[in-house]
Length: 94
Image 1: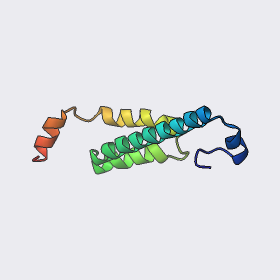
Image 2: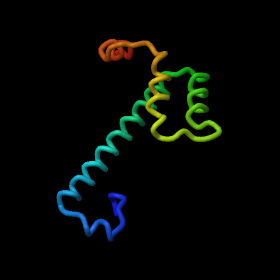
Image 3: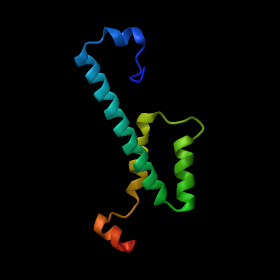
Image 4: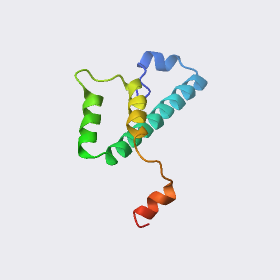
């Protein structure tokens, strides 16, 4: 089942509960997409050695649990300069 429920559980849901499950799955997908976008941004703004350290920290000997990723991304982004979107676009000639 697309919601991650087994068929027996699915058929016991009320329409409202089914809607809540679908909304929760959609929110989870949006949050995952935001985490991937943030990771891509951090990776694009790291030098080669910084990126290698970031990937090593992310994968490590034992993979980090998914809930640790936001903290790791924030730590990696903390050392980056803060600029506005307008300044960024200007630096790219847009």
